[in-house]
Image: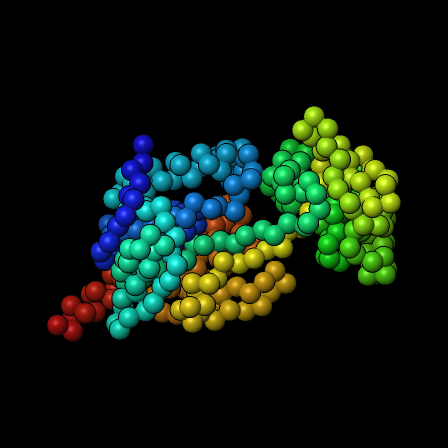
Length: 318
């Protein structure tokens, strides 16, 4: 059983902010590299609503909660500290030192910072969507498409990009209906219409009023005109909200993408602020669990090497 530190003060070589796959992976590498490391975990992973995660070799089908629990146990074996708290501020002092203020009132210091704060999904405000998200209301066919394969799919359009989602999910079912909802028919291009027809996707105009649910399962999509279309799974497109507040406070450069503003990073996750890395969904919308873990590993190894060379150069100067 992993021991969770309730409060922690002092100086670390690295503080990892975020205890998801990316943050724990970075901490694992750093712990194995004998670096004094702290993970600050607010306990709000993006995939909490999901009963299982897919596509992670050897961990396919594992629950996200079990995956993270095992990760916390692994980092503890290498002396990594973990505190259940939220980082509310990060400031850079003179030299290599960063100060991380925690919501609980403690302040910790580190030479390097890994930001793995992820993002939050804002779901369409249709009654039933939030309650069923991660079950039969889903957003990623690579995450959940196999589990609902060959069922009657609905796709809730919130932007014209929802056409792409409808085309993608047609790989997992030949019974797909695109509910235009707040998207006007005039927003669909001729290419959109041709591709939808080629994929066999039905297009239904009109605003969605609510989801029809019976015996705790999705049975249909009800429009404001009163009509109900039988469906067994509904794909939605959440609005991704990057959790970049700490990076902005540090002055990291952000770049606009179709999915929000994310930090400018090099291939290792290093931001434009020396000594600060961003990994996982903190650096991009499309990072799945396996990608996030890989990014954390790469950042951890890079940080260890950089600290080693920095200390050796300092010793040479002395």
